[in-house]
Image (tube, one colour):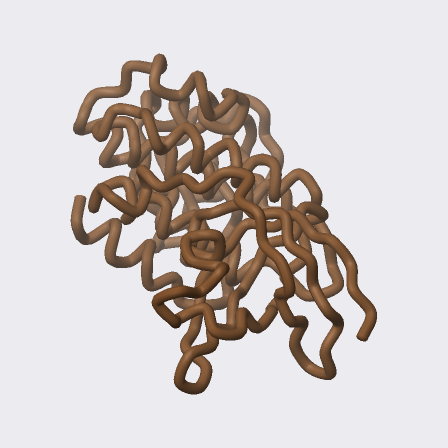
Length: 248
């Protein structure tokens, strides 16, 4: 049975039989891999926390007929703090749920893995009040990597770069100028400050987002806009994001 090494982020795990797990992984090259961790649910399993969601591990995989088989696992980053705090776990859950939905077997996006690992690391120590902005920043950046960067500097419909509209259209792809606003009656109201914060989230490093100093009301507005944008462009229900948005 051919074997190969793989560094990967654990996205989720599913029970298989009486003692095994199917583990969904984001490989370092950005593709999705599904593998069986045999005996992982046993008390004395050699895998343990190494295949828990949010953990990054160096794995040795055996190639199987339909699923890979995990032969060895060594922890690179456990991100244990995310599993021991409810609010951090909820925020990190949005990250791995999105990755599960947008990553594809056999199709890589290397930057996605690096950004995801950095995001989870920042979420471990960031102030609780910053977590929603980190979630929003991750969603915007991940969508941008997949070709869905929102248009915030010009009209998403006519490309007017003098657009100063207060309308944001998930369907059209960003801001709408006054002339194009009738194209989407469902467009959302967006304050100039929210627009500025969304721009900042796209260009800022995850480690710098806490320093933006966004107040509660503005943070809630930004998250609402980003959730709507994500929901429109991701063709799958993001349960973790739905729960997170309702809990804010």
